[in-house]
Amino acid sequence: MPVVHTCGRAALVAAMMAASALVAAEPARAPMDWKSVHPEAIAAWKAANGAPDGVVADPSAHVVRVLVEATGLGPADTAEFFAIGPLSDRAYESLFVTVASPAAIADAIERAGVPRGEPPDIAGARLWPCGEKLTLTARPVATNAPDKTVLAFADLLNDTAEKDEGAVLLAPVVYTGGTRDASGAVVAATNIPCAVFALYSHGPSLLQLNGQYDQTTAYGRFRAKEEYPVGALFELALRWDGRATVLRRDVELTVPTLKEKLSALRADAAAHDLFVRLSFGAGTTVGEAAEIAEALSLVDGKGLKMDGPVPGQFFFRAFLPDPAWRARPGRLFQPFEVHVAADGAKKFVFVEEDWSGEGLDPVLKPKETPFADWSELPELIAQTGERGAKIDVLFLFAPRATPVAALTPVVPAAGSRIATFYVFGE
Image (tube, rainbow, N blue to C red; front, top):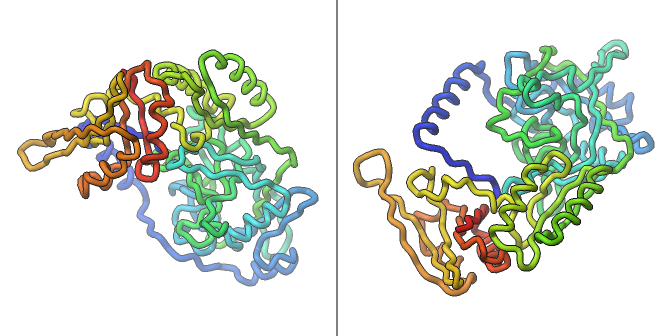
């Protein structure tokens, strides 16, 4: 359930102009297929390390070494990736290309004993990368003699937001293992951009920075500290200290149990990287859920990490909508609406936008349909046809005294069609 952002049209135009200026300021670079520059040196490294794939795992030390090639990215270039696989066409925006495929690298990391984590998934409201933390270093591979120089992760990249956002490059990186397909195969092995390590929140990437990094806002933030010759070989080392830190909890909260359960979570978070999935217990009202969600939003990322919803429940941020979204004319687009009265009566509202008239704004034409059971909702949504086909957000309006349990049936009923729910207490 991704967070929905709303802004006025003037602000949107200004943002688009700013983005255009940013793109214009970037050096012109285009996608390109990668071709190895020093195949003999690559073959020599593989032979010397007994690593035909270009990656070595040491289970006893929990260390993985990966052979990579520099792309020639320099300090003036935006880096969206630290490393990509050999089938990627994104060498123009990555520091390195790995010799091994992302699948071989993931296999090596797990053979080294590192547990597979869970990648971020915006649609599933998993906003934090979940996994054990690895220290990343790099060593140049000389073609005629060993090079003993060891570079830390922070020696390779500049972070233009470090002063305001903190020194993320000094922190260990997260091994999530990346998104897998239905067969369990590594998606990044075959699907562009074939990310081994993206510098923004990207589910298929095997490695992630330890935080939330929206692709749009992260664009331009990271740049190479130094320009290495195209094809220059480096050996990346990923080290795990062997200490499992990730702890995942499903927690049901009510107002009477709130203090006790938050204390227990605080104790868990003191010794672990704690990921929490939340549900609201019996009797919790919409108003109470909003207050609990507000409290949790203050500690999200500062002691624990909210990790998506319990199946069949709302993500906690569903109870924290922007109050400005109540007014239809100010919305960037019109989501579906469901209004629940104090007596439980329900109506579905599809707000059709009519752009046929003059002026910059559409005429809004709400169409209301009463319904009795949540199971009717998918058909009501389907009846909106092409006009509603691209809408995957639903706003729920209900009295603050409404039990959350009276609304949660909407999740299994419409969850296959609706990606994002927001609940407004009346």
